[in-house]
Image (cartoon, rainbow, N blue to C red; front, side):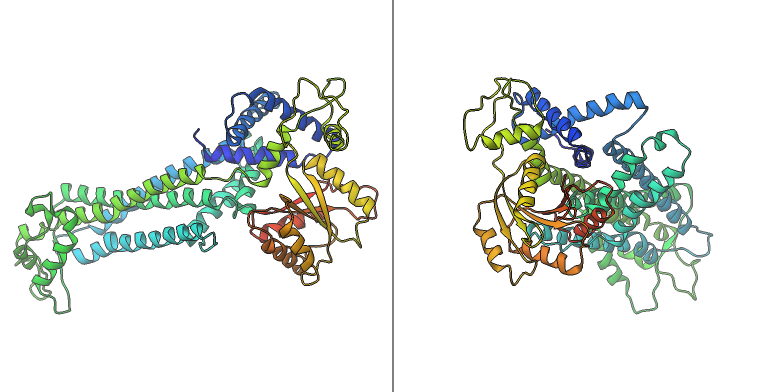
Length: 529
């Protein structure tokens, strides 16, 4: 199935909305709905990827059904797609106008001073070639960095300015606009904006190529506009081209140079159009003291095919090829997106977690998981025929890292129950730590030999994420096997009865932003619910 960028944005949006659920009733209701979705589509989905997008289709239908009651609403993926499409149109239009205007004004000829071929080629051909080479270097560096799994690539200044304009300036303008459609979609618009700012590491491959295509579209339309403006000027005006140099440059050397430049089109065009002949080059050389009255018209006009073909083959066509490469690379990035990441894995587990009840009625998910846990100790409970358990539903084993000086055994039991109910992980092990990496070498060794799929680090939310704590988290993650996620689970003060952290907790927002600065998609922060 074809994966579109806006679908992944919407998928991320709905999962993020589910993560903000606070009340136990809302969490249980959402889990039951997810289970119903799974039961409706489990017979036709072939992979977990198709299962996720089937879930997305149901959630979209639910979203628009609710939107009909509240008024017009758009999903962030649709907003991104629409804004991006109009931005592409704007870049193409501005690039074309800039190319036509610059070429048309540069070719202004008043009959006394011919157009300097050298300056024209330097501006519309040589400069474009340099920019294309610079772009290729960036693309190659990004490709090498991706293969080596290193963050070697940094966005260019142009990409940074475009992303800032697209995701910071434009949303602010739309917020101030007196348009009903924007006012009713500010939440999804702000989400689309924050998606790039807060998850630039996780979605970098996606948002690099769209902005790469924007710059390529502008450059292509600029070159196409310059080519069109030049050709139009030649058709409707009596143009004269010449060359001059203070340096000792013979006509033979200039002829040799233009012969090399014309190689890409010299094999299929007649000699009269490939480039000026040696005699024409000699006849179009401008000597200041002689003026242009001694120069022949046929020599002065012989340059225009060479100039137009130079813009076409060295500026317009390479940019067109880069656009094709960008489109293909974007599709490849979408196809190779890792849907096995923890947040997607958690949704799949939640969908496949059976709803069990002795009386064959659906029960809240928390009771279902509690009964699922009891099945490990006794097998007397009967499964409801309508919900047959899938194999290894809670197969995601978890390991907890916590300070024993802060979290007592009683509190740990409460946390484990919350993890099983909310994250659907089967907690198998608990390791005490001191938040000093040198003192916790034994804990690190236990993590590496453990068969746990997930590692959960407990921490109180009121304690700020100071540099030392963040460095410790980074060290722990670096010592863990590659691909194994590290969850930072934040609770309230361990001395309080209620450990749940609210969605609007200011301290949680500080932690969330601090974890983002680590730029590691395998380090996730969650609040205890």
